[in-house]
Amino acid sequence: MRILSVVGARPQFVKLAPVAAACTAAGVDHVIVHTGQHYDELLSDVFFSTLHIPAPDVQLGIGSGSHAAQTGAMLTALEPVLLEHSPDWVLVYGDTNSTLAAALAGVKAHLPVAHLEAGLRSFNRRMPEEHNRVLTDHAADLLLAPTQVAAEHLAREGLAERTHVVGDVMTDVLHQVAASVAGSAPELLRRFDVRAGEFSVATIHRAENTDDRDRLDAILDGLGAVDHPVLLLAHPRLRATGADLARGAVRVLDPLGYPDLVTLISQARGVITDSGGLQKEAFELRVPCTTVRSETEWVETVELGWNQLAEPGQIAAAATRPRPGATSDTPYGDGHAAERTVRALASVS
Ligand code: UD1
Image (cartoon, rainbow, N blue to C red):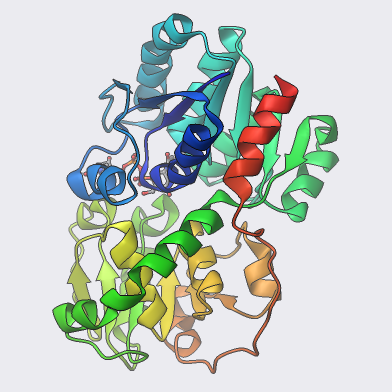
């Protein structure tokens, strides 16, 4: 069996890591295509090196652009690559423009397409990611859902027959990495001059938060008003706004590679973010999360008490709330989602 994975943006590299390892273990021929949506060392290369992902077989080098220009360029560039490799499955990940372009290119080439992390919904039609998810799910032949809630969304849209619940592959990689970095915390805390349990880690990069200047200013003021240090890992989209990031409690840092990020979160008092992945990573590491959005796809984190949605003016209070009660629930699976993914692809092909 030949699987062709298409990735392009930071969270997709994290998801690719356990899938690539599971393909190797199962003796599957795995072709990796990188669209080039993310091209910076800190958003791309560092994930391949630290998560031991094989170098991409094909690099399309598309880069940044408007939604239409970026997605269209990917679509054009992907077509000959898919036809040349003629895989049994085109595997697409998550909800970025790379996901949608690959799904469309695949089905138009009459190749079977599988969507990993299918069925997530924010029900917010202002989010580019929401359209990418919905369109990809309806185009794809096989929907690999991370949770029961995601499978229920797909069933309501008439897609139950194409759905397999495999668990969350980000949880696979999180637990592997967390076990391997346990000893590196003291050095990282020294490097960032913070003490365990006395700082928060923040990321803000979603278009709905960065592209409206009044909202962004209110968010940055909210981070600045937190009563303990806030390490803000600044995504290029956030830096590109030109806003004054270093307000009050905020210390501005570059994005971190995955093992350092996991180590830092594991030592933090809290996470403040608009990222999907970080909400889950905080939950899995049992660190309270404050999500600067009005909805979340990862509803289990909120229902179990570990995640709170906050408007900008509520950030400072939410970031100092007491820790919730312990939970042993595992809504994101048992750490073997990637193996289940490869098995599902083998059984359906
Ligand atoms: C994309 C995804 C988002 C995901 C995020 C993870 C879409 C619609 N959005 O958002 O779902 O959560 O990745 O980071 O696909 N830039 C650089 N260097 C890079 C990449 C981007 O400087 O390596 C800058 C460019 O100015 C670019 C901007 O960041 O215009 C936004 O990049 P883009 O890939 O369009 O979207 P992200 O905000 O990263």
